[in-house]
Structure formats: structure tokens, C-alpha cells
Image (cartoon, rainbow, N blue to C red; front, side, top):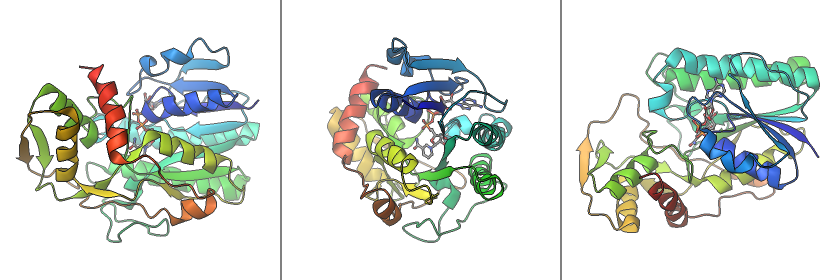
Length: 311
Ligand SMILES: NC(=O)c1ccc[n+]([C@@H]2O[C@H](COP(=O)([O-])OP(=O)(O)OC[C@H]3O[C@@H](n4cnc5c(N)ncnc54)[C@H](O)[C@@H]3O)[C@@H](O)[C@H]2O)c1
């Protein structure tokens, strides 16, 4: 049995990860400051004697004897990470320093949840891991993008300087049950608006594309990455390469919710990337043929079922 620390474990992705790790017979410590996460996301795990929930902010050091660390803590949606940008960048940078310091001290293997946002508004399409990105360092998204980029640097430096066993994943847009319904991300926005019969707001002309990965596919990729060849550090993209325009997504949501909602077009926010699509060849090669299996419609139906309980 491994003892595993999941920071941000009460969040959307973190809670699915805690559940999976417990199901595989591990001892899990879930650490969270509940900024965007919620006890409700893990309440069903509290009866498990191998699950511990700790209220802690990763900008402060934390100590526990663990074998592995999944560093998931960081607000992920623009409305949340722009609410307190200084705190966001502190969470990425100081959180990385604190968790890497712990990994070094207890000789734990540590995985960083990085993001496709490190590619910024990409000029290369789809984005392979070798692409360095096109990021505005002083824009409204920078607290998140640059914080995550700096965290990747710290991970690499702790590895080369202190021999810490690290893994870096770059997560592309992920959706599924336990997403925060008010996080302002496109999937949650569209579903909540459709379920409430409100207009569906589309920024710009709706022709910008995104790829959406269902959370179970991501969790599978995360676990495979943690257990992959120790020499393979990443970064590795984890996302679904199937691209959809915002218009196509809105139409699918309206159809699957049987909603009467109409489309409403709004101006594009600053620095909104026009296109984002993962190149997942590296993940396929290094993670035993990993690729997303759950298609958009199936994943949307599960997510809609969850969001109905939140109305
Ligand atoms: N969901 C996505 O589409 C996506 C895409 C790219 C990257 N990621 C990354 O994956 C991770 C999880 O994202 P998510 O979608 O589950 O977001 P989330 O907001 O649901 O989860 C983040 C969790 O971290 C906690 N947290 C935030 N700041 C903290 C701090 N200072 N100390 C302790 N806990 C803190 C929050 O309370 C929350 O429970 C994040 O690091 C995010 O950047 C997610």
C-alpha cells in the first residue's frame, strides 16, 4: 500500500483522482484549502479509513511521510484564478516549492498538474510538447499561465539539482461531474444555461475551437504517467484531440438537454486563445497507448446528469 498526497484533492479533478487511488488500495491524504474545491466532492470518501482530509494551503509548507505526491492544487478556471491573481501565482510557485521540498525530504515521487495554457495563444497547431508557447507575460491570464510555466521550471530544476523524481503533465480542457457549475468555463456555462433555459453565451463568432477531455480519461493518463518509466519526466500532453467549435458544443448541449435556449453572441475576452488542440503522440508512445476513450456526447450526458442535481 502506498501513502499518497493529493494537493487540491477536493477539487474537480483531484476528487476523481483520490477516488481512483483509494479504489486501487492506496492510503490517500487529500489536502485542500477549499478555495474552489468543496468537501462535498469527497464526502463519499470520508468513511474510508484510508482516506484523510486535511485543510491546508500549499503556499505554506506541509509535512507528511508519503511515497507519492500529485500536485493538483491551483484554481483552474479564469473567473477563479483572476479573482486573486497574486494568490494564484503564489499557489503555483510557492506550492511547487513547498511540495517539491517535501518530495526531496521524504524521497517521494511527485507529479505536477501543468496545463495547455503554457502554450498561450499557440502559433503551432496541434501543440506538441516541444512547442515553447506564445504567452503574454503581463495579461490577465498571466498569473495562471506564467505561474504554471514557472512551476514546470522548478520541477525540472529540483530534478536536475536534487535528483527529485518528477513527472509533468500538461492537461488540456477537461470536463465531467464535480466541475464547479459557476466556474465560467465553457462546458459548465453552456450546460447550466441550457438547463435553466437561459440564452447560451458564445464569445466571439463561436468558430474558435477547443478540445474537451472527459475526466475519467484524464485520471487514467495521470496514473499511467505517475507509474511510467522513471526516466520519462514529461512534460506530456493529456487531452482529447477531437476539436469542436463553440457553436458545435452549444448545439450538442442544447440537443442533449432538450433545451429551448437560444445563442447569444458576446465580445471575445482579452487573450482568449483562438485554437487549442493537443498532440498526444508522446502520451500514446510513453503511456502504453493511452488515448481518450470517452466521446463528447457520452461525457456530456454524465456531466448533464450531475449538473441537474445542482439546479
Ligand atoms: N480542469 C481542467 O480543464 C484543467 C486544465 C488544465 C490544467 N488543470 C489543472 O489541474 C488541476 C486541478 O484542476 P481542477 O479543474 O480540478 O480545478 P479545481 O479548482 O476544481 O481544483 C483545484 C483545487 O485546488 C484547491 N486549491 C487552490 N488553491 C489552493 C491552495 N493555495 N492550497 C491548497 N489547495 C488549493 C482548490 O480548493 C481546489 O479544490 C489544477 O492544477 C489545474 O491548473 C485543469
